[in-house]
Image (tube, rainbow, N blue to C red):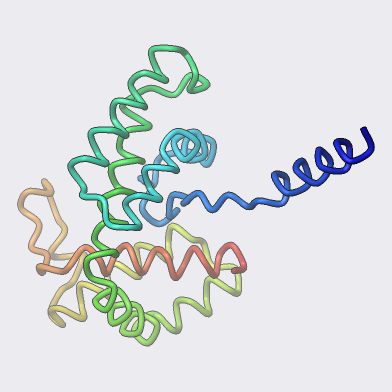
Length: 188
């Protein structure tokens, strides 16, 4: 009986010592209008799918499985009142970005190094308490200006957005800029 108790205790301790490395949703990929609670709910529903994406699962397969899981959770009232229209975009953005990061890791590193220099003053301003939303707008303007120095939001972003005259920029830059500013804002 004593050996059985020792084995049982050892087994329990071994199981409790196992760390689960479930992937989390990169906060910079979440739509700006969603709450942290909605992100956490989505994360709990699809973290194992995100693990698979980090290891090479394709976007289509991961996206379909995530949408199915979210839809079932919403129907079963397991999402604390958040609907499919809120949770699905969170998962889709995370899956798309994580898949892209898997396919182009060097590109993301290059963009991050470029933006650390381009946004250096803004990063310091956020560390010193600058409003995060204002900093994001300024970062976006700096990114556009790096692609076209003549870009002026007061002139080029006037009227209906379909008439805006904004330079073509890789969306990765906006995601990485948000990541850098979120790190500073959250003290990471």
